[in-house]
Length: 191
Image 1 (cartoon, helix red, strand yellow):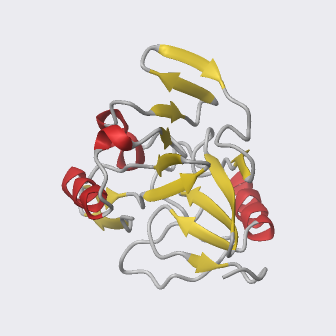
Image 2: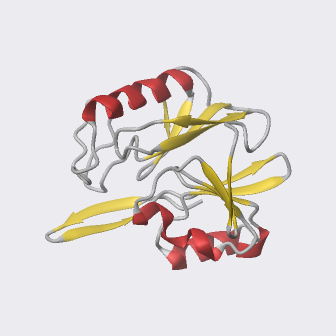
């Protein structure tokens, strides 16, 4: 729906996450709505949707370039990296198949301690909404490397856990939607 981007600047980052529209069991889900309001609203409009049409927001982790716009979806429940589902001011635990059959929320720590990903069975294979388990800047060649350096948030980073999360997703999914970059095949089959 919206391709994520990331560019390191002299004193910070220019970044907004990949945002994916998921149609599942008659429900509309937005993953990681990002922080570029204009691009997000244009993309929704192109799909013939308004913010009030979205049933769920899925947040892989709490970094602002992924989560800032979660609040603009006035009717959506938010499924979060805290393993809580929020509906306005009500907070409840959720099950790993919260979105229905053929979906599974899994823990994928490393980029941040609380990071989660979403696996979805599709007609073309198993898809992983991976957040920043995988991500690239616009200047980088998008190469799959489980040991790729991640220095965007060094205080939160756990390299060992991130490497394990990358391996886990590569084994479980046929294709992966990264936090910033293009969808890619894992080599398992699928699309």
